[in-house]
Length: 362
Image (cartoon, rainbow, N blue to C red; front, top):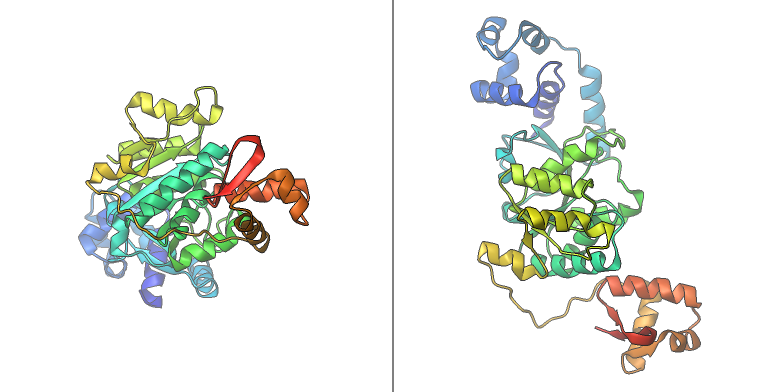
């Protein structure tokens, strides 16, 4: 879209009294915002779904401040707009009950992204949840599926990183304007996602963190995908809301079973009771779409920090197997520093911990 089209679309979505449903009906009649604004009052009044106030609002020009501000921010933050009539707009998303009229985007959405799986879960996962999200995410991404999630702490972040480590595509649906990365700790991750997928949001630039924005964005996460996998979360969590929306959108729902005594497994176990498919391996998802796992000989080596690289080399020198005490003796790291780094390396799938605090390379 050019700047004139941006202006028309921004004006359309900012008109008071016009919800997404009425805008979609207007587009069916007039096909573009420009044609809507060129219509006279008599043409608009003939439409039974428009009130007199709505007809008057369409004829006004009271949103210039909002429009100019958005145009300025779009340029400043290198963000684009795509409308529900654009080819780039996700195909599956068009057919949910309330598809967003406009999407703000950084990066690109490709036709291949129509084959997507959502991976969502708690912001406070257990190690079991983190490791499972990475393992399943990597395997799904390697088959060509795009992984969609919400850029949040915990499982969302693990899912995005898994796709990137596998050399695959991933899309993050944000609950703020795209000029604000939330959480801030995921700024580097967001930059990587833009290179291998996209950040998208239906919220205007400048929209700050509001709790009610996140349930709204969850319908987009599920709506873009063929199915949604829930990895840990309570029955009242946002991940369960995403699963509920997936069901309403006639999407597949998958769940990772967990310890019945763990609060974080409460949600997935509940979904399984309701009929969600149990997932313990990526194959459980892929077989639903008649896709076989393609085993590749090359091993994916996740990104490591400089310090993690030192631990990696240390393990290589010692037959790939060392105890924590031995690593303390052979390195300049304290036990606390080593424990934190080893946990991160375990979550990345680089090492594995065994009995008596011994670690070895995968």
